[in-house]
Each structure stands twice: as C-alpha cells, then as structure tokens.
Amino acid sequence: MNVVSFSENTEGYLIPFEDGKPLCDFANPLAEAEEWAAGQDFSISNEIVVLGLGGGFHIKAIKEAHPYLKIHLIECRDQLLPIYKKQIQSQVDGYSCFQNLESLLDSEIFEKVITKSLPIYFMRSTWGSQEDLFYSLWKNLTGRSVYAIAKHFATLGIEIDEGTLTSLKQTEKPLTIKDATDIIAKSNSPAAKKNRGYFETLKELLK
Amino acid sequence: MRILGISLLRLGDLVLQKPLIEGLRQKYPQSEIHLLVNKQFSQVDFLFAGLVDKFIYFDRETLQKSCGQKEYNILWGFQQLRYFVEEINQTSYDSVYNFTHNRLTAHLAGLIPANRRVGIYSQDGVFHGLNNPWIQFFNSYFGRKEATGFHYTELLARALEIPLKQGAIKWRRPTGRNLILIQPLTSDIKKNWDLNKYKTLGDTLRSNTAFEVKVLSAAFEKDRLAKVFPEENLLICNLQEATQALAGAALLITGDTSIKHLAALQDIPILELALGSSQPLQIGAYSNSSIILQSRVACGPCPHSEKCSQPKHQCGDLLSVSAVYEAARVLLNMDRPSWDQFSQNHPELNVLKTEIRNIMGWTVQCLSLAQKNKFDEVIQAKTMIVEELNRRSELSKGVSNEQRTRKLSDSGAEAS
Image (tube, rainbow over all chains, first blue to last red; front, side, top):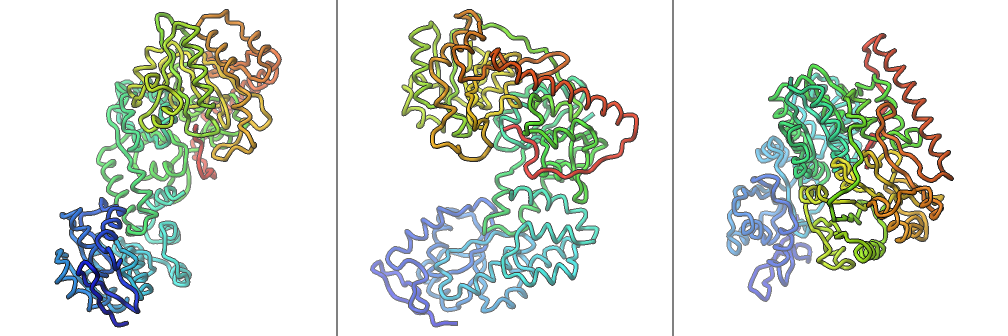
C-alpha cells in the first residue's frame, strides 16, 4: 500500500492524497460529491455498498439525500477512516477494510452482498492508486467474476461444468448476463434447466 | 376459464392488438382475461375497458438497466424476474396467448405454466408453438415484401386462431362534427412531414372551410411544436384525452402513428401521409377506409431504423400541401369523391384506400387507375397465399399435433 497523506484546503477540510493525487476534489469536495450523488440511481435497494472512501464527502452527500439508506463501506486503506470520522461524521452501517481480494472473498460482507445482490456504488477518484484492487473487488462484489458467479449459482444449486469454468477463467473481462446465460445453457444440473428461461429472457433484454 | 395475454411491444402494437383482445373476449365470453404489458404503457388501460379484467405490468426498463449498469449485481435482474414470474404464477392460467411474436416473450411464456399455450414459447431453450401454417408465415415473412397486403392485426389473429370482426367496421361520412385533428409527429424523423407544411395546411383548412383545426401534441412534444404552431392551435393531451378528442373529430390527418391506429379503432376518417419507412401495405389503419397518400420515390418505403439515405427528404418534399388539402376536402365531403381525378392531378403519389372485406380481410386498394394493376397483383398474391395457408391449416388439423420448432428472428415480428 502507498502512503496516504492529508492537506488542508481553503475551507479547512483535510483532503487525502495518494501518490501525490487527491482522492477527491481539493477545492470543492462537497460540490463534487453532491453532483456525483445526484447522478446515481439509489432506488435499487435500501441497503447499498460504497466502494472507496476517499475523503468521504460522497458518503455525506448520499446520507443527506437518502437518510434511510443503509450503507456498507468497503476500503483498502486504513488511514482514511479516522479522518473521515473526525470531519464528516456521517454514520455508516458497516465498514470493512480489505488489502487484497482473498480477504474480501473470505468475509461475511461478501457473503451478504452476494446473497442479497446488493448494489455497489463508487466515485472513481476515491480509488486513487488502488484502481486495480478496487476494480477486482467491484467485479467480485457485483457477481461479475467467475468465483462470484460460481458462488451465486451454488446457492441456486447450479453447477458450472469444468469446460465452461476453464474457458471462463481465461477471460479478464467482467462477466455479463450473456455469460451467465451461456453457463446455464451448458450446465446439466436440473436447477439450471429450471432457471434457464429467466436468463434467456434477461439476455433478450440486452439486445 | 382464465387467460393470460402477453403483449410486450410498443404502444402502436398494443393498439393494433385491441381487435384481437375483442376477438378473444368474443370467443370466450365467460373467461377472465389478464394482460401483461410493459409498465410504461399503463396509461392505455382505458382502451381495454370491459375486455381485460386485470393488467400486469412488466418493468422492462428497470430489468434492462440491471443487465447493463455497473452498480447492479449481475443476478439482481434474475432475482427480480423470478419474483415477478412467481407472482404471476400465483394465478393458474388455462391458456397463455403470446401476442408478441419475439424471443423475449417466448421465454417469458415458457415460464408460465398453462394447459394451453397459443403463439410461441420456449422450453429448455427450444422454441415451440410454430405448428400453425399462419404463424409460420407470420414468423418468416411479416415485415417483408412477401407479406405485402396482409395487415399485422389480421395476420396475428390468424396465427393465434382468434376470430376478428371482419367487415364489422363501417365507413361513415362525418356529419355534425367540425373538428379536424392533425398528428404531425411520428416516432421516426423519416416518417415526418415538414412541420411548416402542416402549418400551411392547417391555415388553408381554417381559411377555406368551417372546420376547426387542432394539432395533437403530447406534453413532451409541445416545445418543438410551439416553434411552428401558435399555442392556441395545439391540443396538448395524454393518450386518453387524445382518444376523447378523436371521438368528436371529422378527420384525422397523420403520419404513421399510434394515433392513427387509435382513430381506426374509433372509425374516424383518416388521411395518412405515408412517408419514409411507413409500410401502409402492412401497417396501414385497420379501418374500413382510410386514405393513404404515399410519395412515389425509388427509395421508399425505406428500411426501418435506418437514417434517410437521400441528401434531401425526397418523399416528404414530393408531397405538396395542395395535394393533402385536396384529399382532405374529398374526405370531408366537400368535393365530389373523384379519386381517379385526384390521382391524375397528382401522378407523384400513390393514392390508397384501406378496406376490410368479409372474405379477403383487410385490403389496400389503389385509387389511381394508372397504378391499379400493380396493386391488384398484391391482392391476387394475397388471395393465393390465403387459399394455400387455409388448405395447409385444414391438412395439419387432421394429421398430428406435433409441435414444430424453428429459428426465430432476433427482433421477431413487430408492427412499428
């Protein structure tokens, strides 16, 4: 992990920096966060995951616009939370810090997100130099990785056949509903047959 | 008996399917009919009053978003769709009619258990329900030149074996009505006639006749139309209000729009300006006679969902205000109905008239003698196809009830 430092802006806020780059807008982080929050669709669920804390101004913006939302925060840099607690003070309902993908995959929050299909939100600038790790966390939390989809399908009683699994593991791209449909179509398990129609329907919606 | 109809296309298609729902009601008068439609068309319930007992709304937009947007879990849509289908399946249906001939609804229909499924459905990824020769014809040819002369409504009715009230709609000359409605905007820019021409037409009708002329506008179209038409000439309304306005109209002048099909349901005289990709020989008004003016250009009708291939909008330019004005006068009974004379005066146009006949069903007649042979050929071809498909239908009844599977086109057959 790189070193995170903080600089005070003209409004007196401490702005986090990583590798010399701010993790939110230095001059006006509140305006940036409000604009970002206004562009998101928070109607999907009343329980959400925010991936990346940065200065935490976007958490404040979400809480102000949608006070009923239950927010789980996922970060990979421990240094950010203490400052957030001091200067933002918007309550989050859960906080987890994962410095690698494996620790996420072993966690309770991962189980919960997968089981409940919770939506994942992020403000890209908060990812800073940890873009690759955050991207991989996002891919898994949204079920777009082979591991995550296999876990998802296991809860439905659907087995992914070996050949499909091998070929999927070779792709780096996040999986889509089309990939999920192909997995279902190739699987011989009765649960796959039972659910195939749902996936075929969704695949048609993508056209 | 409980029937579920699935109709998940666009507004125009839903309007065009009303005669089928009427036919279904007529065929099964004691049945309970439920209709599954896209949530965005929940405002059209009024059209089916007395025909449909319950509407079920499909939230296509949200499901579509869930499949593409980055914040959604990949299986969120699956879970929502499963809840939705489970809720539908709380009711047991004797029959499921798929009015939407495409893959999406075939898969959806396959998820709903019923004693009888009419129209396509899928199971284990294989399509079924294509065993009727009419549905095979619809599946293979609708929207292509082979199906010219067959109306979407009648073809779908035959495919789903639903009786239509053939010839029941009578042409009435307008009496005691003094309102002309204009619906200038269509869903496709290629099908639009120049708004300034519509403005001149409206002004001419106002100056030379006793009719009041109003321009129909949905709320979202208002700003665009207000740039050309004075605000007092606009009738800003929703679909239900437009339907009410149509009921008192002497004439509707329109492009290829859902409003045209609404007017046809109400037996309102229609003057259709068929431009761009409009296909009046397949999706004209299902009415016992609307008049269609179609510019005779080499590039028309052009392909659906593609930009105009010409440097100028030739078909729109060729259609003059004076031609539309003259045709409107004839339809309003102000001039003797000499369409042949009109056609001779406007050789640049095909002048067509829709009719619903008892045996032939829906037909489009050419009113211009010079073009008549070409259109008579369409009617002859239709007659031959009808005879052949009816013969095959009879034969298939006696043979077996084996369900055939077949490749479906991606989009399926859609009217608009």
